[in-house]
Length: 428
Image 1 (cartoon, rainbow, N blue to C red):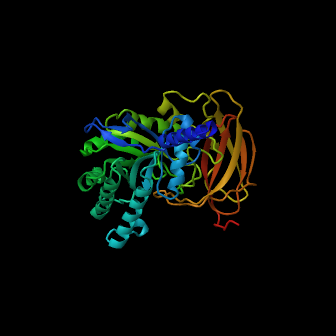
Image 2 (image 1 turned 135 degrees about the vertical axis):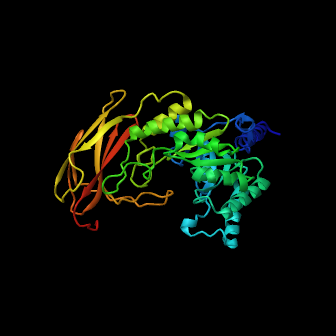
Image 3 (image 1 turned 90 degrees about the horizontal axis):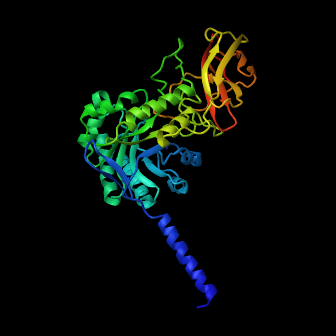
């Protein structure tokens, strides 16, 4: 064998060995007893420092995150590859039908198809090293009182375990239910579910205590947490929820994590903050931890410190207040004065952008899709922290947004609802 050919063979062998190691299947297990649970990945302790979302994964890894959560298996192969490239794992979400969307858990054909779809994804992706666990459904339980839903969930979990014993199963619910009825139903009807995932917003500060009082012995993961939802906050006279500033939200992320996750070692296996990215849900900014241009908000700084023990070197700007001289019973053509109080922890120069948006008054339910609300580019004239809004012709609700950015990728945002007393007009 010639020397060049020998080197080529050795190179190929090394490359093959490297690729095999890089893409070796991970093995994830829950060890310990109730109250002393630990999640292990490849026999090493693994506390989930996660987010829901699949964008800006490099930023997530830099911030100290180690996992992402999906809500369906669409495009799963690409997502697993991308996560693995950044050293992240994936809590693989499997979308199950919701009765409020018309899914019938008494329809055997529909339930079997749902089962087959889930198992197909498991067979295809179970050996990918980025797989952390299988999350069966998201808030499909409604009020939690239909046993047929739990039987379907457990059937899927049981079959997953036969195919893939190396990754735990979880189902995800919206809060614990009336007097903990949802988690108790999972304990009763779903023996093949290893972990209970709980989406909790306004109730997160008492989640751990309420979970213990339910008597359920399975470990839990906080699968969504963030600001109080629009269904949980003060409303204006005309019914628009009052959105906290991104600065206030950041504190909420930190406090919720400390109470429901960090202080619950042995029962809670970690969390997924919501949402790593942005989306229209009630408003353009309610749940996003990032802005559309990738600027991070205070929620990112809060989770960075929670995960790493250290705040980022350059922190996001802060908003103390956003005020208008009038907000109700406005007339078309009237001018409203707005003022913003903002600062930066490092005294960085700040850039302020003002945007007026329509407010349809739609309060999001279960993350359902909402179209972006119209903007009125010519309605606002601004100079720094002051702005003047010329009220559009159409009546109804609006929101004035103030975006604050520094030169280091940090941002802050606040908005104030406005109401115009005039006939509703279609927006061109």
